[in-house]
Length: 229
Length: 91
Image (spheres, chains in turn cyan, red):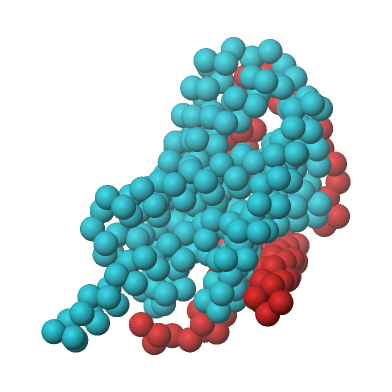
């Protein structure tokens, strides 16, 4: 979903750039609370993993491909603020080194594929965690559901931006249907990759998964109260 | 729960990222992605302008370089953020 230069007009691109800069500065503050002995060693690696996985386009429909966005995954592995910093780094490198995503569209890409997927992914994940049984086995399925939802929402936000500052007049109904439709399919791939990645780390070291901590803390409480009785 | 050391998990993640970028990327689908395809079908693909990336396009070798650069930048950034936090706590 990398937006190239030229799709959105200059005022809209400046606006998305301001939003991205504000989001990154908020994330820089928020990440201070998230980064500890367990998340810090993994943050750079999560960014590297997202970057590598974004190279792997998979087929979704005839003549159309898609790739992982990764915001939901990053948020669940290292926390939403740190996750956004990881995503912003990925888009900066893609833009400068690989011309993947436009220079004036860097803010747009950080907003759509970083901010939106992190916020939507984390919100869906935390909501599911609140309503589902507090079990470690629920972490990866919740992450997969969060990933699935995050992609079409990002596609829909692109349509909203295009409605504001698109450089060509496109019927918004058909643009919405096309963007959300294809990105639901991409979201299925996103949820499979997210499920596999989260499952793998939960299997060996659940305490390294930021989003699994509330479940682990509860489990430790149960163990301790059991010992006291 | 702490059966596998953090170092081993980190090494595993790095290895997976390098193999995905360096090897598996050769098998990536070359068709246009969702947004590109939609822009072609809805008549706004021509508004896209491209610039030259410093490394050109994605290939096995450049993909590996990209992984290392992202790791260095994101790792360095989070390291700096964390160090600032511990300075705040001491001060």
